[in-house]
Length: 361
Ligand code: ATP
Ligand code: MG
Image (cartoon, rainbow, N blue to C red; front, side, top):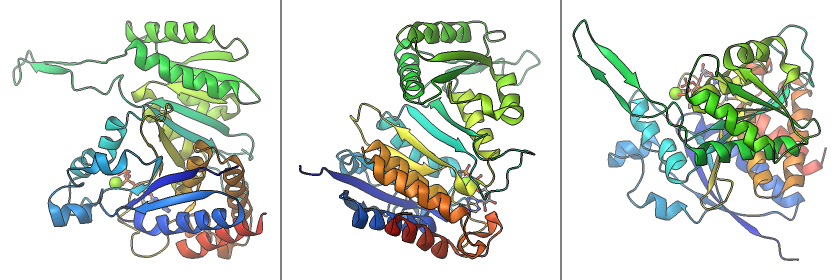
């Protein structure tokens, strides 16, 4: 059988994005040697503040035409606030990808690994292992609203939320599918229908309607306040969590924070219909404070590449990378970075993971 060739745009971006991306590529190289996975990698130097410095824009005018035939975008990090304000760099690159490529699912796995100190007392690997599915295109993040009587004592601000049936149903469907595919088949729906009087009761109703199609999935609706507390107090309750844009944004920083260093957490911005390329990136930013020292943890980037392979149908390659990450995290401290209490450089840790992928641990 002919193997599909996966077309991937490789976009390191700024700061430590440029340091961790080579390690992801090293691991992908090892994957290609060991498995019959075929990748057609296109390096992209724009979507970066370096490009902005040279051209006055984050991306060339034809960026969409250049990227839309790719199957996936592997993205490092963007932002160099010393030269380009964060809102300019972010809105000029990453947020354009999310919007123009309709990447309406933001998926974040949250998992505590053996060998990583957990900020929650007494938690063991296995106690924290869930997915957050965040709606990525609508909800509370709109520019609808305004300020009335501005500058006066009567000043009033209105900020609208938008929940469409199409937009809500498609993220709920994705979350139910994911929950249905997992052994526990459990879905937590984040809500606040006891306080937000119109959108959240309606959102709960859409969740109920979708539930009718997935009778095997157990559903637990939780108000966002107690849900957040349980991320800390009872993380074992969660399997798949689905949330609106704002609630999902907050949860998807809180969840990974409970599993140790930000240097581990990956994310996927998905267009599940594959009309457009999906984007895979670490949760962390460009980290100007540590850039240039070769000390950034490359795992978030490498795990993001593994999520990409899984999305492209290469489950065995994904699993091999995850096993190599696990083995490295429990291995010698000379092979893990400082944020994990080790002494390895970014390069050494990347080499250690790639070697384990190649050796088939
Ligand atoms: P963003 O702009 O994406 O919201 P940020 O600029 O606020 O992110 P990061 O760039 O993620 O924040 O950095 C936050 C802190 O975490 C910094 O102190 C940084 O050095 C550290 N950090 C981020 N990524 C890594 C990594 N891969 N390895 C080690 N430390 C990291
Ligand atoms: Mg930043």
